[in-house]
Amino acid sequence: MIGSIIFILLGLFILYLVIDFAVVLKGDIHKFMDKWSERLLWTYLPFYACWRLTRVVILKKEHKIR
Image (cartoon, rainbow, N blue to C red; front, side, top):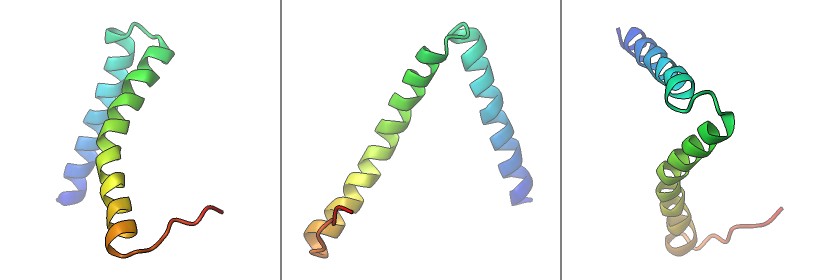
């Protein structure tokens, strides 16, 4: 049951991406990628900042550069 719901939601999201690319942005891949990278960055950034804050300030673990 849950698997079918996830499958349907994933299919709807892919359909939305295709419609967004084809109709709204008229097929310009650069505008499409700029739009979605902006959306994903602002969705991802607060979670990454919270993880880094917890790790560095609370747990006192320094981030090592490889």
